Length: 242
Ligand SMILES: [Zn+2]
Image (tube, rainbow, N blue to C red; front, top):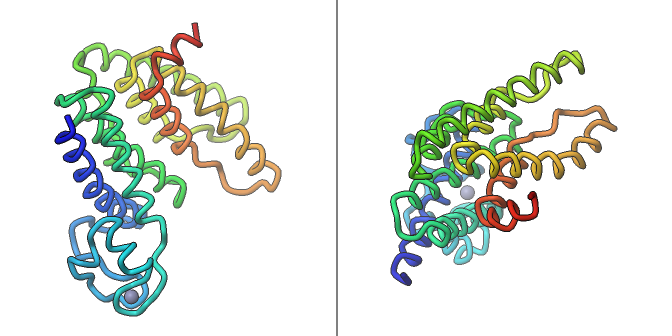
């Protein structure tokens, strides 16, 4: 099992590095394949030794190897978070194909959450990819599919109701797709608990944002957090719920 954790951690670091690319480029609508990674300040293309997850950041003391510009600590943080998510998937589901799909689902949820935080948008391509992986992560694809449809349907109704009540667009379509992913990933009860947790925590920043009548609050980070909480502590949370 130690071997599998080593594998999960190594893959987690690599996917974490990839997550940074996805977050930055998809947030701006750029290609995620070309060009090679560059320093955002001096535009110097990075060498492989500047590109090793977490370790390069430590070795370069958080600065660009060419111009000395400070590099955002977001990079290593995302890499460490992805590593954690991959190890959690292995811990919860063992060395199975389901764990691989669960790890990929969680990886995409992290990307979506950070993109939403930074741009208050969510690329449909990532969102539907997450839904696809989630469907394969449970081992009971028909159950997952029906939970996904039920949650998406319930959220769509809620959205129509809220939108006519508030006379403005409540919730985004992206939130509904993500709701479907949560249904597929956690099952019906699990997804309901995750939605409950997400709404409970999201109330605080929503109230703050309401006061200064500013931007809409990104909701995906809360949905992703609720999903992770139920994925890890699902049994305990379901027990509490009952
Ligand atoms: Zn530079």
